Amino acid sequence: MKIVLNVDYGGIGETSAAKRLDPKFIEDVETGRFVGDIHEKWGFAETLKVFEIPDEATDYRIVNYDGCEGIVYCFYGKLYFVGSDECRRIFEDQF
Image (cartoon, rainbow, N blue to C red):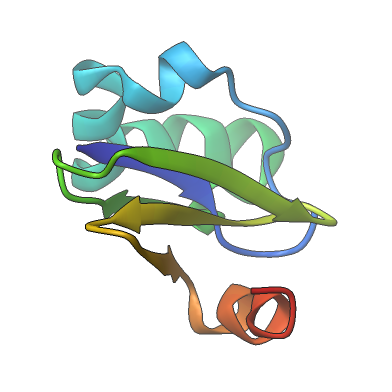
């Protein structure tokens, strides 16, 4: 499963759960079309990145610290984290 996250502080703000998983939105972020449109309007859409977690993950949570997001997910009984290196440093101590 692919999910769009903000990987820097501040950034574009809250994105609805439905939009984060929308294939068109994901494609636009991956190809830069969305980033170009938003960057022109707001100046910081380059902070959006697409991350992938296994479809077999039994649960996941988007964690947020001042706009910097990551995903903690459970896969075969173990917890894993995906996100930028900056976000990883923030959340490592919490999990």
